[in-house]
Length: 74
Ligand SMILES: [Zn+2]
Image 1 (tube, rainbow, N blue to C red):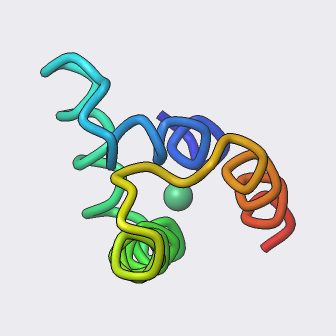
Image 2: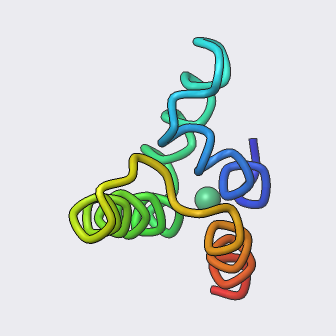
Image 3: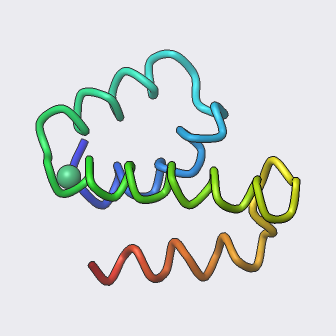
């Protein structure tokens, strides 16, 4: 898995929408790649904040799309 793939799977990973094999792939990448690890950390915190402020488990779709676009520019 390369960085692009890892970033693409990140939301699903955090939402636990991936199957075990994919989760293992993403986690393997995060262990090896500091850059993606920081992104994952960032998203994790962001989601905690979102949950706190609006009480919803998931970010609204529109926000989600904008965020993944933003993360791609890193
Ligand atoms: Zn990476």
